[in-house]
Image (cartoon, rainbow, N blue to C red; front, top):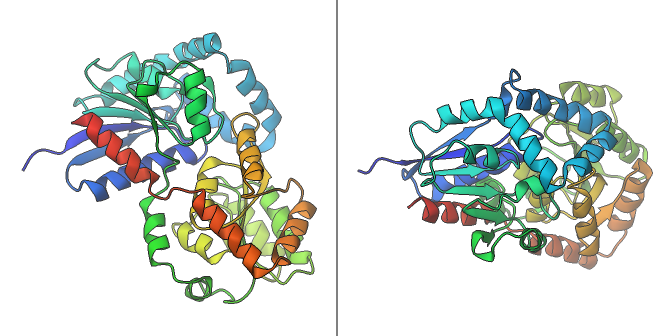
Length: 373
């Protein structure tokens, strides 16, 4: 039996999306090509002793509490000369870590973060293929478009077109969709109906159901949205997923609103989404991809200035959902949606599913397999 090829996936825990995408593709590789690869998912920015690690640690607090500051930094650095200077500055401590991670030599290096592919290029052998997997959906920072990468995998036609405008040759681009974990494809394949799924989750089987999520780190506005729905005249059950934010989950439990079910960090998101009629979430690409795959029209409660503004425009343009920046907007949107005829609600769910690609992780796995041969 041949020795499995080693693949190195680079990511950073700035939000949950980069890690989730890397783990989704790693799982797809194992399912599609069992025992052919060993995948190491490595976060070189986790060490706060290096500059990059200290910057990463600031990401969560800044994006939660002063997103305007994030937007300012995003726009100021979103020009090519600044990108290269920034990469050089943060690369000092990271290059040493990446040299160690490159032993023993991998058959391929894939970056799921905009800053790491460039740093890897400074220390890895020329013969090793280098791939960028873009995890933003529509618009993205210039740091993603590494003109020297062997391949850039794009999550949408808009992303593909943006790469072309930035000078990436067409023969180095692949259009493959946003990767979500194979467990979604499995859950969707075995899904029968929402009533049965709600019974499995011990929810009211016939109640209109809205899932609210604050992302992997949980964001405080989730509490206001849950309270607004609970206090409204609507007879809905609310699934509030607070991620790793235990304090937020505890505060919502203490609010003790009827019909609000509180969850922390969950490993059954496919089942929760398949039980829900609507998804209320910030406009992060990962949650958008997961919600659409499960047929949930989207209620976008906010967005990160910079890369997520385009997601809101795309969702509203394609009639995949609405932008609801205030709790009263959410209540109005939910009231309107459940007041529509059932046939129109089913059309909305079908439109959501048609916009998704649950098999994207497998498509990316196929690309990486070919490039590592």
